[in-house]
Image (cartoon, rainbow, N blue to C red):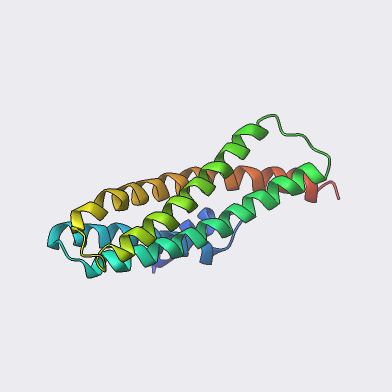
Length: 161
């Protein structure tokens, strides 16, 4: 019971400013991408690359929804008349999320159709590794950005009416 309570407590803490569903979804996308990549590398299989490509495309959709949330917090803060000193950092994080979204769509399409074109599976592995690393980095940076923007939003906009 303690383990379940610990996991639920961790999920609630990680989901500050968003939903638990979105946090779990992000973990599952990253975990599935990493595990399918590992299976593809060990067994040198083509069908797993197709699954990787499709999950990558879905992961880009997840990132888009996260980015929309960050932009909503940023626009809400600015719309209420508050100027952020580090606004360019938040814009940079949002731009990096857009770049990873594009990478996941284009790379996912390439990786998904690579088996259909009878390409060597190892040709699709390097973009897959880059996708997993990029998604992981953006997830970590995006989490801290979301929490900070949410806290600013709550303290400045919601409390001031």
